[in-house]
Length: 247
Ligand SMILES: [Zn+2]
Image (tube, rainbow, N blue to C red):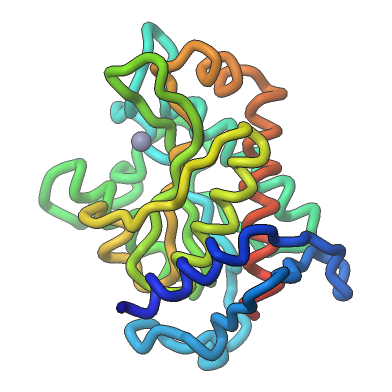
């Protein structure tokens, strides 16, 4: 069984994870029951965390879509605006906990607008801009914020997609657990297969589908500042937990 699957299994089996205040002033997760040691199980595909000097950015927050790429929508409610609002809040929460976070867009524009030398399509430029930032910044993890949509209006809740890699799976697990607690859902994180950011980015990366725009209750949460703050806080809790385990 691949390493990331074993780590994910262990994390799921250690059903209750106790969050305790970290001795260093952040947060720590003390696994109850079966322990997992992601440092021991580091994936050879990625450089070991110890081989990194202090990264310039610990967390890159990717506010999904932007500019003429609105993402999914219901009426005039656009995914790109919700992604940006949640990402900004996430940025502020992480910074307030002393985490060196970077937000890859701060307004409504496509990342391809920053990338003039790539001669392919705007979509390709956008993706390569998203993919190049982690290397330029020597970042620790990459967290891409999105909103989901389903034909079935009853489907609701958060789904986190991760790479087929141990640290990404662990990060995905922590964020999924945080969002499940916040939204009273029971989704498991999923290995995200073909998505560009998960395939191409060389640091532990996750795509966070925060909730479903196609569900009325989720949509109310996604569009209210209070709901956005709660979502951001839940994601931040997962990142802080991961950060205390993987250092
Ligand atoms: Zn999206």
